[in-house]
Length: 105
Image (cartoon, rainbow, N blue to C red; front, side):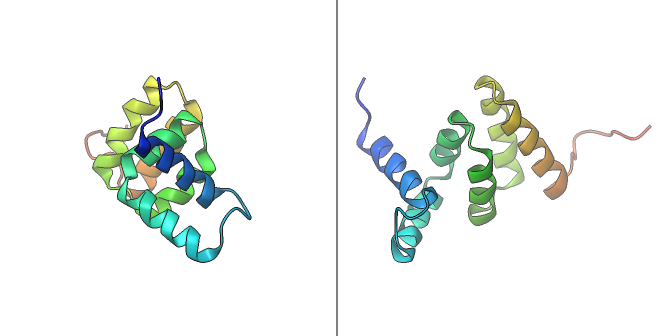
């Protein structure tokens, strides 16, 4: 199966943005703008590669909503990425809390 044009663009933007010395500041801004327009595919790619540090950096720049974090959790579980799952759960707790659960005793 061949990669789609968008998959190739996404991979190039991820490589250009997250590889030190690969791009100048102006190019990195363009890469980040592209990645921010494609939040879900970017997160999917980072989760597939278990790139938690980059995922954390991207979340700080792109800003995930509570609903997005809830959407990403089952995908991380499907991919069997415990580090990503833990990071997403911590982020959910820090930023949004667990509104649908009561953990008090």
